[in-house]
Amino acid sequence: MPRWLAHLLVVCGWLLTPLLAWGASYVGLWAGALVALRFSQPVTMLAVAGSGAALCGLAALAVWVRFMRRVPHLLSHRMAPRASEQQHAIAAAD
Image (cartoon, rainbow, N blue to C red; front, top):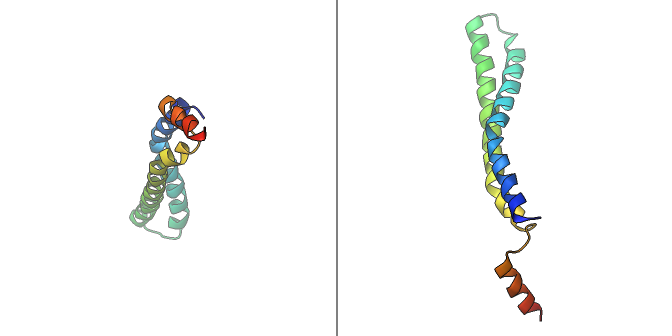
């Protein structure tokens, strides 16, 4: 994999972070609203739905940030060596 592609993947991954957190909070809000239907008071329903949104959004954000911090290391095994590193590898093979 070319180095520029690896860097592009990292940048795109970080740019997707807000969309991922927004989507997860939407799913959490939807799930919280389903649970909140069991309560009769509107304030309690809002609190349960909001808590579900916050919990899912923050959990997804924490997992994504942890993954994105490891991506450069994971991609480094697939990247093409730099020109200076390539000559050392050729010399070591001879």
